[in-house]
Length: 164
Image (cartoon, rainbow, N blue to C red; front, side):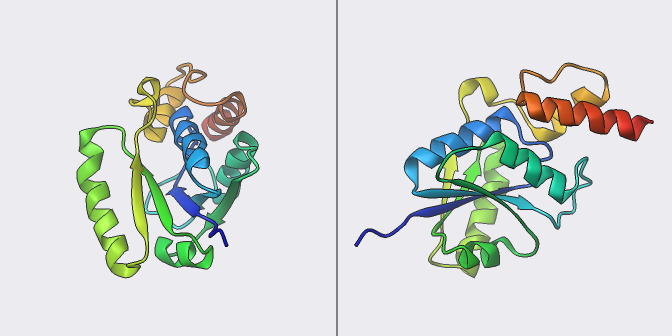
């Protein structure tokens, strides 16, 4: 009997970028199911609410083996509740590695059966981060090359509403 391989790709996704999309699509080729886990409880000040971030991610992903879910609390508890065996983490630059390595070690200590797989985005997305996209958009810059059209539109509407 074939064991279903489930991977969780967690993040704030505020907003979801082309780099995130690239990682998810590549992970979807490696696993039977990929769960894009949108973190609700975060120390970050987000532009979008959890419900908005989940809806945006759902609008971007349409693959048969990709599911988008919001979650609060400890990632390892969420991973266990989904029956997943793998956490996907994206690495853009060497500066990401130290933090991600430490996080992977902590996760392994909490849930020894879990593995962490690091994926790097395609070269054209290596420099994209959600915080940079938000900053460029807030300052009136064009972000269409960094996010999907539906996300670009949502960013424009949210910033217009915030700026009054």
